Image (cartoon, rainbow, N blue to C red; front, side, top):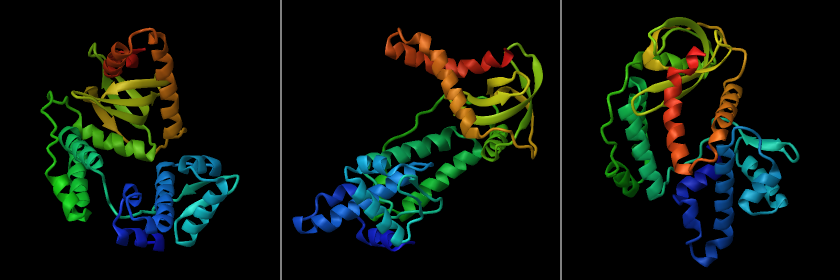
Length: 285
C-alpha cells in the first residue's frame, strides 16, 4: 500500500469531513482531501482523462493538478500518463479506508440484498459474501448501520428458468467468447444460433441476454429461460464487448427517438417494458 493510502487509512476521515476540521488544519487537510478526490476520480475512469478535465472537476489550475499527480506518483500511486496524453490509474490500486455516508451504506445494502434475492445462484452467493466482507472492515458505528439497515427487498414474481445458463453466459461475456445456443421463440420454433454475448439485463421476472447473432447478422435479445441448449467454446468473437455495447446503445437511442413527443413518464415506462418484450420479437427478424 502506498504511503498516501496508509496516511488516509490512519486518519479514518471521509472527504466530506475535512471541511469540518478546525481552521489550523485547513491547508494540510484541504490538499489531502483533494488528493483523495483525485484518486477517486481516476478510479471511476477506465480510459485516460486529460489534465484540464481533471483540473476542472477538482476546481484547481492545471499546474496544481500536475503537482498533485506527481505527489501521488511519488507516494506509490499507480498512475500512468503525461501532460497532453491524459492520466489513468492501473488496475490493482486500492485506497482504504472504507468510509461511507448513510446514503451510500443504504445503497450498498439494498443493492446487495436485491442481487442476493434476484440474481442467479452464484451471483446471490457473491452478493452475500461481498456484504459480509464490507461489514467486516467497517468501523463499529458504520457496521451497525450496515447490518441493521431497514431497507428491504420485497417479494417479486417467480423468476423464469435459466439460472444454470446465466453462469456460463456471464463467463462468456467476461472472456468475450462465442456461444452456441438452441433458442425457442414465442411461437415455439427452435433455431440454432452462434452468438456473441455482451450484456445481460435483469428484470423482475425474466433475464434478457443481448448478443450479436451470426444467423441474423445483427444484435438480438434472448430471454434466458427460452434457451433450450447452450454450449461454450474457446473461440473469441472478433469485436470487443465494449464496442458491441456502444453499438447497441446507439441502436436503442435511434429506436426511441420517434417517441420523443410522448410525455416523459409514459415513454420511460413504455421503454422499460419494451426492452424485456423485445426478446420475444427481435430474434425472429
